[in-house]
Image 1 (tube, one colour):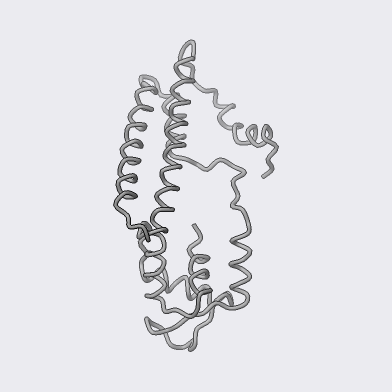
Image 2 (cartoon, rainbow, N blue to C red; image 1 turned 120 degrees about the vertical axis):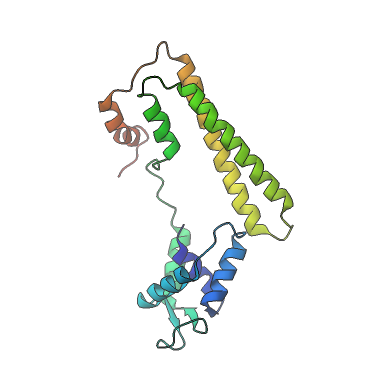
Length: 196
């Protein structure tokens, strides 16, 4: 997540103070991502340094210093909003790495490991579902964040189910050759026509 762009979006509504930006960011995201006020002011200083935001009095610091977006900041925000995130390479997902490592460790029941993680993710989905049910009708930010997390967790559970199915179909447990592990990202990019 680009916190600097989130601040630019809030500033695009009009001049705001640091504490106000923190409160509006947390409220707009359903208070799922709490912020340290120091992070807000550090980011505002960088935005000001980069010419993307400005304050009424550059020498005055603290909670009463109002910031506003500049034309360059508005252009930066627009460009960020319209640019798709780079998803050409799979992210380094800790769970994927755990499963790949577990396949190489003797004595580890990978199918059992998969089920442990699957149960945990189902419990998380239940917690998020309860959170969504308890949310007010006007808490759209929270609802969107929870929906995104539920979809993400559902995808991970489906992946774990696929892992379980693949392992179940193996004739005998086989360690993954080191050469294939090292070349997998490049092979994946070539197969789907991606470039670095």
